[in-house]
Length: 633
Image 1 (tube, rainbow, N blue to C red):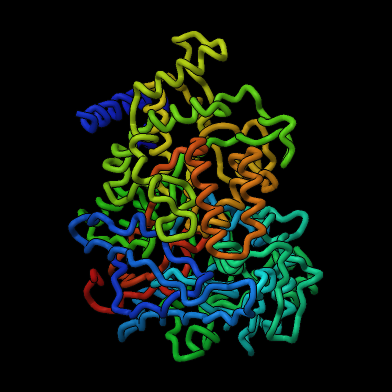
Image 2: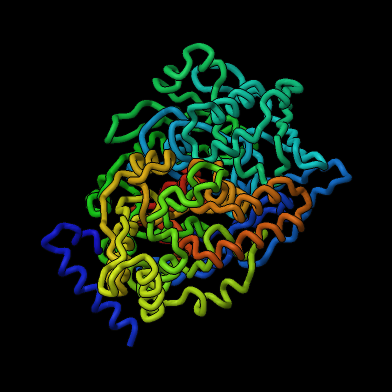
């Protein structure tokens, strides 16, 4: 692993080793017999299929089942003339645990702490919501077998013909933990209000502020109408875990405000939060007779009585804990995971669908002020403002070497960030022309840089210099390795990245505030999103987490934001994709399935989609191994 060689005495050796690799290159267990859910709703999203086939993992375990590649036929399409009663698909039943008890009382999970540690849901990006997956539920869940939006706290919904009103019908009798009363529509409106607060740090805060809170109305305790300022048939994305849609108790907040939330996590989920030690862990206890798990419709209760979610930064340390039976499941780099399988009898469980879409992001391509292009670039001398430099970066990266080495072949090339083959806006020309437009070509990269340097007064031997952001990323354990590999490749064509080590929370804050220290290339692994959500988050200048903005991106997005007709939205999103592709706004790399190494003596199955927003979730669906022998199915 390249991150072992970050210390100065190993840096030269690592570069030499990678050059050797490049020179040579140039000359789970998620199977299920559970039937799929019914045809998706038109506004539901299907998982990306570009990465639908996965190479086998280590020989000691079966290869993860490939994701389905058949495109879903919409069962419903909203129109401008009819009231839409949306057919709502049912969630796939959780697998029933085999006879017998879990072999441990407490399931110990370990993950990178980069998501941030806070009990305030709106105090960070959606990624930190993985800490509340067991405790707090959402109106709309994501089915792990179909990747469709399915009911959770909302049992059904309707969309108005103009696309601006969502009517949600809620489950009745659901209780908040510890006697905080029944979940009702008042809690829903309160949760939306919290997410849209002036001090909200959510990445999707701009989209949460699209709710017209004054015009939204509570019909009764179990029915609420969400009024949007602009039409959005994709808004279920935000009500799901993918978009930070966790529900919060209004009664708890009314009693103690933000301090009450910080002190205790009250939810409606199948586990009760029991505390955290900062920098160490978060703990949970299973609840009996939960309304959804162990109560309603006979769904089995979760396997484990307790869960201990531990924060461990280094993949090597997490691996040591797994092999020593101190932890039961964790996320490792692919080389460590394969060794754990081959040498120690562990197994790999993969997300059912591609979870992340990794790219090298060119941070800092913003106007002087949101929506104001009087100063077209906030940082005029920044080399990546120039399209020739951005294309040169793309031409310098040998993606196939990264795929074959760091990713063990278990990823698929991504031609365009934020777009997927079976979602609106896809253009097959991106894949067809990818080698021509983005392919590895060091001579082309050098020629582009030569033109750029001549224009800005740099000598022919002077390197182009900008910052490289080096940090661990949750859901992407190869992040440091990949960044260092990209650094070596860029140096080959005359680009020197000054690598700086960052903590994610600090970088996130600098990025949100558009500070100059956030400028540079970093490896972003955005989780699966609807195309609208991706464009809204990264490509309109009024969003604090924008990546690339110019008058064209703002104009295209403004038209998309007003469109209701699904065919029109499809065309506008493709237009945006074509433009972003032509401008080399990022360096797309791969579609990435999320993989966890698990102890098969403790864990049997874990069906999760990979599109939870926090990269992984559905922790209550982890099924214990209850047989005397390890569960290697």
